Amino acid sequence: MPQTIVIVGAGYCGSVLAASLLRGPGRRDIVLIERGTTIGRGVAYASHEVPYVLNVPAGRLSVQPGDPLHFLRYVRQSHPDADAEDFMPRSMYGDYLQEVLDQAERAAPAGVALKRMFGEVTRIDRADGDKPLLVQITGREPIAADRVVLALGNPRSAVHPWAQGLLHHPAYIHDPWSMPRSLSAQHSVLIVGSGLTMVDVAFALSREGGRTPLVRSISRHGLLPLGQTIFRPKAVQDDGALLSNAGSIRRVLAMSRALSVRMQKEGGDWREVITYIRHIAPDLWQRLPEQERRRFLRHVQSYWDVHRHRVPPSMAARIDHMCRGGRLKVYAGRILELVPEGDELRVQWRRRGSRENESFAVNAVINATGPDYSLRRSADPLMRSLRAAGMVSEDPLNLGLRTARHGACVAVDGRPSSHLFYLGPMLRADHWEATAAPELRAHAEQLARHLADSPLPGPGR
Image 1 (cartoon, rainbow, N blue to C red):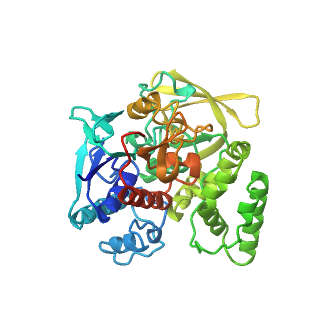
Image 2 (spheres, rainbow, N blue to C red):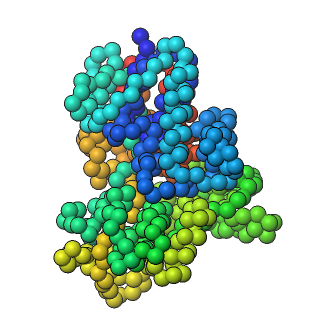
Image 3 (cartoon, rainbow, N blue to C red):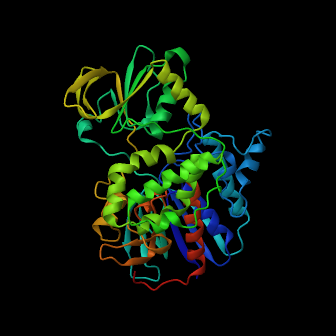
């Protein structure tokens, strides 16, 4: 009997994993379940009226093993002059993922089949039959599975204390991808957060030329993502010196700065150092004691994020233009309260380092604080049920899920599952770097090999 592998979620991770499983030998039925309306896109690569651009150039976004320019060749079918360093529309990457999955399905060997389904998975139960898990789907018959992979994508943003009771207020926008198109030059907007999502929101608001509203951004440090350049991704070789100092985040930071200075003196780019650190980040993170991880999160993460999560040159130029023209003002501080004033909201806030409260009124407040990775605060019915059943557990730093080798979910009793796996950004709890396409593609390939090659476990865990 072929094994049944259920993948919950058909965004980037679920689609890449399904494509990898379709290529391997053996006998298996793959069930790909998507709660949205399209396969292969998720939130990141959905179609929007706004032409959002990928943050990584075309030459580094292939999902085909051993073929690093696979996406670039796909791009050149419609853009013959595209270069490896070009930044393409995100919706095009969604088209690409759909094509990759379709091709893998057409070329799948005998005995390997894919079934696509749309629906909401609300619970996964242990079963006593031949197949150890039962996947419960709203309005459908449950599916008996040998293995289940959670590929749920980024969790939603937290409802912060200052937003309590305002989810239905006309001026509060919790989902940054559902902005009204009615905002124009006579309006004022607060974007909470100053990372990549804020850049996307500001870009969308600035599309209409002179009709750009006055935009403010407030975040804890008031740091903006830095821009991309053309650099050598494999330029740095430090013979493991950073890893050997992993007992102290202070030493790692000092060595990283010194390495960046050296690279720039030699005609290189500090981005080459960041790319190198990305490659060793899982080993580095796992060697850091918990106290040092906490120190990193408290003192360093914001600075790492703006250097690591960069924006295309065109986006950086647009944000710089808005700042110079006074249409975007970025502040370091924290929001104390949002007070309704008719259809507007009054923002009570305090600048970083100040004891004085300030306030201003805006026509819209847009939450761009990013995903909330805390499992304890999750509003997802599936995650809540799995946690209540003890089948998954959170890490002590609230970064995501505890996982073992190949993404096996670690139960509340500390034992890794042989049947339930996770693939996605909450792997950051154990790997730190697990939110971008290149890292997630590698995790998907490793998991696909494990699921295809390893014998079916017994009905226990």
